[in-house]
Amino acid sequence: MKLGSSLYNARKRSGLSQEDVAGKLGVSRQTISKWETDETLPDIRQAKRLAVLYHLSLDELIEFDAEVDEIRNVIANTSEKTQQKIDWTKLWAEKYPVLASYQSTVDTKKYAAELQKLLTRLKADYGYSGMDALLVLKDILGHVWNPADTPAGDA
Image (cartoon, rainbow, N blue to C red):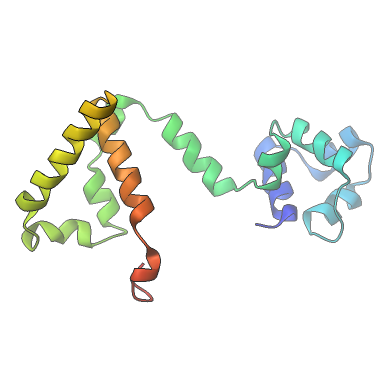
């Protein structure tokens, strides 16, 4: 995402108009518009003031992505009780249909036994809880998966 888009999204999320921001920073509304359309860039002092105004670190402001931030907030604010009501496999299967069909074609017992061994080893070697071992194993799988091994369009 370009800096201008980040500035625009952060301002919108903060509920401020270009005029509001301009007034707080002592610049013109046109300056804010130029920053948000990538015509010009704020200097480092103004960027820091924008970050403070938008309640973000300078790094967050530069890399601000409204969609990622929205997802982060949903995850943080979803209670354990609500999470238990969600059929995660069904939900993710809407995006990745293989999750709804693999059980009828894959010998899951064979793979489950191997995965159980790995989970047991993670718990024993590092003292992880079952959930922590599962999350670590999921993360390891994510790191070893190579998108280059996937034919174009299958990722």
